[in-house]
Length: 124
Image 1 (tube, rainbow, N blue to C red):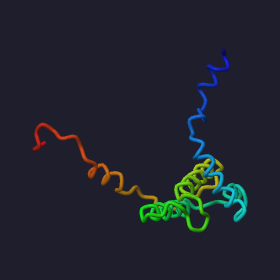
Image 2: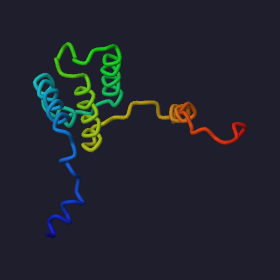
Image 3: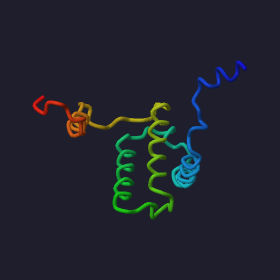
Image 4: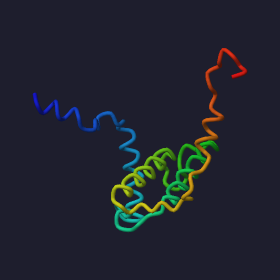
């Protein structure tokens, strides 16, 4: 079937777990009521605002809170929704990268701190 050949070349949406789509839709439903649906497509948005929100949710998870006390949705669903907004705003042309414009050292430091396979000669 030629349709199968071309269809298999496109994104495989069946691989996205339903739990992700369902929980993120719950976050977006509350967000749409508060800010308007797809508001980030109408007005430029700052990357730092969404990364800060992601980090706040990560910190709350690390502190033992699975559920957001305001929305009663899992923090991970909020993280996924923020990531979705960043991606969508990037493609909509409304994402403003307001971060430091010089390349930082985080990637280099992570690579240095990442445990490597032991070598035969520890002097190398």
